[in-house]
Amino acid sequence: MTASHPIAAGAAVEAAAPARRRIWNRYRFWEAATPYLFVAPVLVVVGVFIYWPLIYSIYLSFFDWNFISPVKEFVGFANFVRLADDPRFHQALWGTLIYIVALVPAQVLLPLGLAQLLWPIRKSRAQGFYRVTLFSPTVISFSVAALLWLWIFHPLQGILNKVIFDAGFAKVNWLSNPNTAIWCVIVVSIWKTFGFNLLLYLAALEAVPTDYVEAASLDGASGWQMFRLIRFPLITPTFFFVLVTTVISVNDEVFGAINVMTDGGPFDRSSNIVYYLYEQGFRVFQIGSASAVSLLIFIGTAILTWVQFRYVERRVHYG
Amino acid sequence: MSNDGSTMASLARSAASRELPGAARLSRRLGRGAIHLVVILLCAITLFPMLWMLSTSFKIPTEVFTRDIQILPRTPTLSNFPDAFQYFPVANWFWNSLFIAVVTTAGKLVISIPAAFAFARLRFRGDNFCFAVILGTMIVPAVVTYVPNYILVSRLDWINTSSGVIVPSLASCAFYIFLLRQYIRTMPQEIFDAAKIDGAKTWEILWHIVLPNIRPGVAVVAILSFLHSWNQYTWPLLVLDDMKSKTLALGMQVFASNSESAQLWGPMMATAVLATVPPLVLYAFAQKQIISTFVTSGMKG
Image (cartoon, rainbow over all chains, first blue to last red; front, side, top):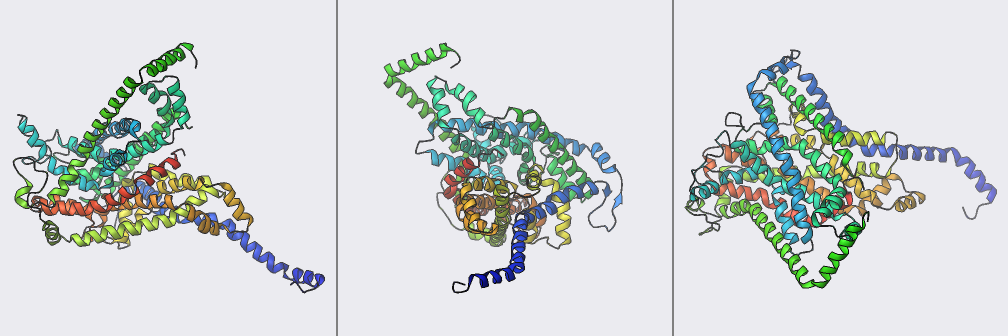
């Protein structure tokens, strides 16, 4: 190129122009397509395995089907009517409510208090040990956790009964007593899950700007004022995230513990709506009513989430 | 600042503490000591079941249940581990857990990283809509999808295979995309502008600029995803019915549900140890990094 005459070079450029435009166009096309190619795989997977099932569940909930039979029989709202009449379903709903009422405060507020406790001693050398220890139940499986607590609640040789007996009280059949079984599952899930939210809160506290805190302490804010007026408002986004995700996941999470420890019993007293769905769909293969249950779970969750966005999110302070 | 009284009070208080530095420091130290005490107690409660699991996995049967609580095995034995392998295909369970966790994590990273980059730095028609579609999956409880996904997986003949567990699990990656997006957003815009001016294509920016700079974030997401699939319970329970195809997490239920094996506390706890050690070690190494990734992500949409 360097040796060629300017005019000759110009002619060469002219001749190459269509080809170059083609390359340019192809470049433009691929550049414009790239973002879509980047998000397409996720959208496909999410569409096939989350949104399509949601829609298909609606369809299936109007049919009577046992999973094997080649025909699905349209039954209208019969599945929903059957649920409304099923005392086991009522029991499962009641259990679901107890799990929410007991576990949401425990999983949202307990870690928050603990984070406040750990915060003043964050520079201590023991902090790393504390964090690893308190988080450790979070990294194990729910089924392992349930198995460990099975031994603690063991009616004859479990440590809980041993302590109670030594203190002079009668032993309790924790897991086969209809009044205590559900609380055993709740204790296990608190033990198993509080660490994750604790970690989120600690991370949020670390992101609080130190000048706010210093200014407040110069003004003589007490520890409680510091929390109520400075730290808590600044970590409300995390608080809200924790609240919403906890409400969505509690009943899903406890399934593993129920399955290993109580099988929903005795008399369905530790069952919840997820366990009921599992029995309907995968034990007795009532696909229609299982789909109806999953639809109700989705609607219930959506309403709860909407309520939180409507009434709690307003108070969230996005700094 | 709004009223002078409180400012005066604070001045008085700071003056007082200047007069008595020793006493103030002492009370603060006592306060910290009390906090340490409470936290140590909580740590003990947290650790106790796991320590018991560890010690029982080395105990001989007669020592498992004793009159008084016995933390350490008196005659430690290793035989619980080979015993567990004899009762159930624990080796298969272990490899299944590992395979499923590794492949699921790799798959999630491969689809999440480009998407996170697109949502962090690229503008395209429908970007907000696509992001909303993906984040929207976080409010769909997984259980709602089980029945239709089970039908799909059985049509594909994936029952009792790891594909049946892995492929549908790829869909729960919204949280990881969110974390990675926040991480990529912390990179200065100038880097991207400079690369663009130098004529880099978008995928080249992803490969040569984004990827090398977000390694810590990717590591954290990889660990979280690994922990999640290693511990996954409900979906594998539905898909993996055959004894040999199960994972360690499901193995716990196998032990507990069989009245004969439910008495085998030694081998049962040995299996639980196998299920617990890999995630615990992984977390202990990555603890600081995980916290700092959560700090940068900020959780602020």
